[in-house]
Length: 150
Image 1 (cartoon, rainbow, N blue to C red):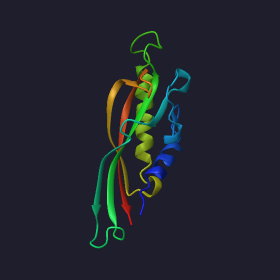
Image 2: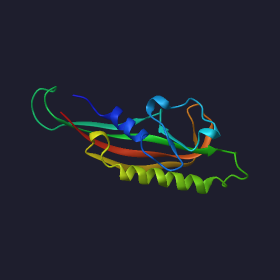
Image 3: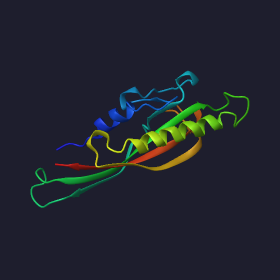
Image 4: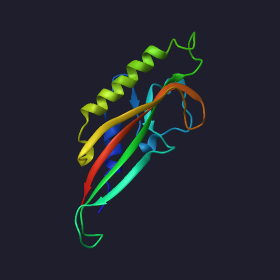
């Protein structure tokens, strides 16, 4: 019995999103530079949230099937804050890239054997930090996942 989270993360990293580099969990950089952006990566602070495990039958815990739901959280860093001529000159590109990510996620409705894979929200649209704390124009994108595990 095992979850497909690693497979799902791998499959997300293989999505082709025009103009955006997509990273796998083992490719998250401590510190981003503008040359690395736009970059979408698993958010190391709360990658998996809202985990819920529901048994689908009676019996021994190791033998029965389960429905597992959780949220995967990603961060999009588009360009460093202060890298342009004004505060909002990079904003249109950030909006375009965020929408490209959302459409790619919507089109990837069955990653790694998931039963359901749906965008559940976008948050922090504005300054977000890379793992080292440097601020980037970007956002957080959450995806709800449902798996059947036997």
